Length: 384
Image (cartoon, rainbow, N blue to C red; front, side, top):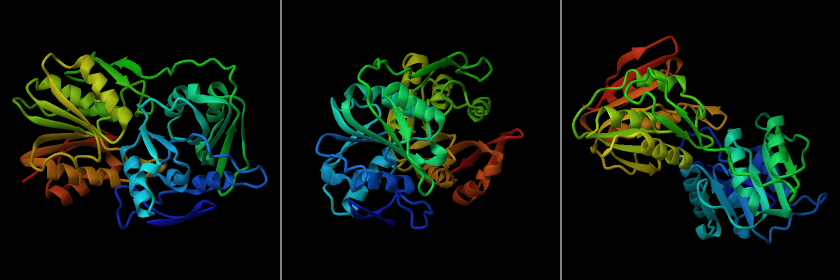
């Protein structure tokens, strides 16, 4: 937990799920810069009496600090939403003070102050600005924030094209602000997302099927190399197995499992609302008739009953925003062991340098290399 001191007050904040040895804070200099700007006497304090929307608030730092103004938080992360609720409670604030919307929900009809934490994905920013633009009016105050390495010329051009004339601030502690002035004359065009493409012909059962990728999902316009390698080495499993595509992204792994084992029940799980929406559309477009599946936005396998799963397929992320970490993978592996029945299996693909085999041996007591090439490795661990 870390303490954030701002003009709005001092707040104890943590990420979710909270780990005692987590080296990462729930806020950074970009969040601080934006909160100071809202009360800057040189530019005049921003009037927050209207509808305040906070887009991309990573761990609820902005929403918590602005809870007195009853903001709307719009985000794609289930973990970010849980962090917001936990941080409001931690600071004695009413959880109903923040209206929580996912990236797939309809935005408010009118937004008077739009605060944007610039995301890692330019595609996600583009999609969300398109969705929010109709609610922005000529007097809306639009301020973005991010670390210098997160804000590029392409970022500013996106604000220019969708919102209006845009400028940036000077950098402070490696953070920068983006000021955009709404131009009501700009055409309101729909978002170009989701993207669709066909799987190549050499990736097993799902070859030729259509993939649906909403904005911000990894490798939006093509099959990523790790998943491509994994698809060529998936386990063959018949019967009415319970299979989980953990961290499902666009759902290609689960779709392939459903085609290979038509009697199986596939559960698609991701903490991204956009990912689960992508997986569901991918499945509906390509699964065989009668295929059974459910779709879960959540914290890994926390909502599945222990000992209820036969097979978990996992291509874990190794970035948390701009930080490289294997913490998410380790949490996924531990959750998979709990969810698997005795004899159930976890199959994982990852870059060789990540050394997932070390974690799997510690958690499961065993790990077998199924396949490998110079960059990727497919690993198998069995619950015994």
